[in-house]
Image 1 (cartoon, one colour):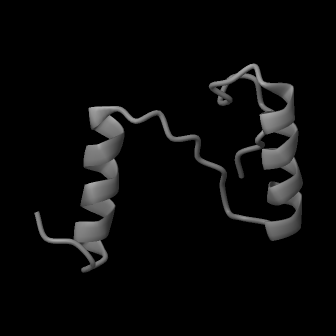
Image 2 (cartoon, rainbow, N blue to C red; image 1 turned 90 degrees about the horizontal axis):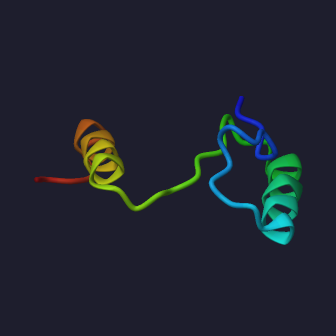
Length: 58
């Protein structure tokens, strides 16, 4: 499981945002925390996941 406070995977220095994400992570217990970066690679990865899940048609 990703830890929201892991400095390697957190794309921000905003301490309030990091604390909020960590608070929500603890409450919700997700399998992982993913920080979105808005890149084309991220878009393609998300589209592929939805196609594989049958919820999206390219």
